[in-house]
Image (tube, rainbow, N blue to C red):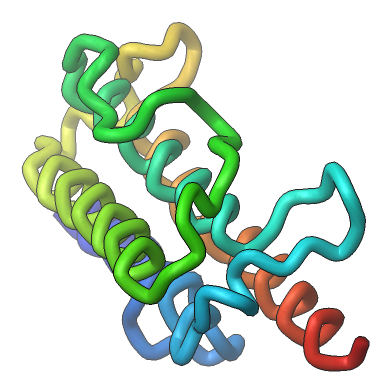
Length: 158
């Protein structure tokens, strides 16, 4: 049980709980505006908005792999990096942030239900344990939190 508690702690602090290292994923998005989220450092590069949906998508994929659920239930069309924004409005940004939160809650709930003895057994992805999948989710959140912080700084310094 202690291993599962530690993994949930990592998931929580990487996403939206207080962490020692600075902004976690949700913290890096605090105060986000549609214009800032849509800004691109150059043509063909991802923007913050796309990183928001990308993180939501991979939380969905991790949930699917953890639970064995079938593909096809992600609320948006596409996979991995989905072009955003469709509409550069506060409501559209709020909807995608809500999607990120919903996918996180769904994954977090499934992670909390994993039997500790199952942590080192495979997920629905061959060769990847549930432990590796869940700790990878935390690492993924922090990786993109750092990218978002850099993109914000770049956008504000132009």
